[in-house]
Length: 335
Image (cartoon, rainbow, N blue to C red; front, top):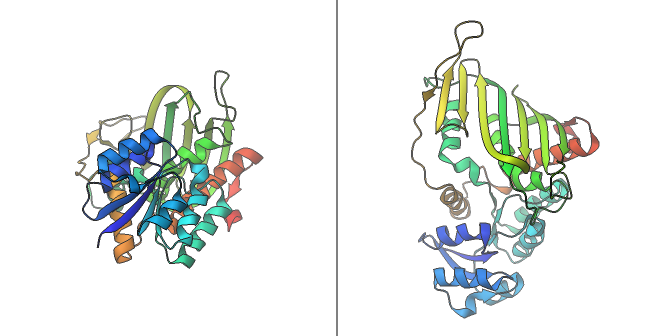
């Protein structure tokens, strides 16, 4: 089966579906939608589509071409409205992260997709990175020499030098735009969350109107505690992930590949890092496209389905509530 796709938003993050689906024989892009004529021209030339496949709004595109799915890569604030339009026309939807910026709306979108009989996925591509997928394998492989044991201490630190707000000009934009990647990875590895205690803040040199940085303790039902930091007004870019278990530590982000550190044998001891084998995986965006295709054509629900992505959106909501209300937030509060 070939999936015919309408692409809404074809610049910036909208370029990867054009590249991936435009060369994958299982997909056939049939329409492009954008308000930026330069973006449209580049995507049209790449796909060699006729002028009749170019549109300025999604409704006209849906009424003009035969399609199976809509791929939405527009600013996060527009995702819910565009997804609903697609559902109303009986189309499957792949939307860029985050699904939306509101917990209640996220639950509603998942319900509406199910009622429309639409397969709904969120393009959380970080979990498809080779390092991240390999960590998942190592956490599940108790007999592997680099298995760290039960994870109870996690550092997830991401400092970003992103001084220009651009579209991130709304409250807690850093959470809905970027933390969604991070907490999706953490849910992929650690399972369900239990509690979040967060603090958002800004810097004196920040160009952001709203807080651009957040720090949190994220507690998981399985016993892990994550020390989480994301900054958009940092003055250095740095990414560090460490997962510490009873047998050792997995580290990635600030080291090549993945390093395993065996638990030291003595007080204040240390161990030399050992490089973990990282298998070759398809590009992360190809992994997203592969799982979306299987979901639509075979009904195999992936971790990035809208329903599964609710746990990711729940953590984002808890980060926002905790930072805004200056108190710990329990997962049970969200229902």
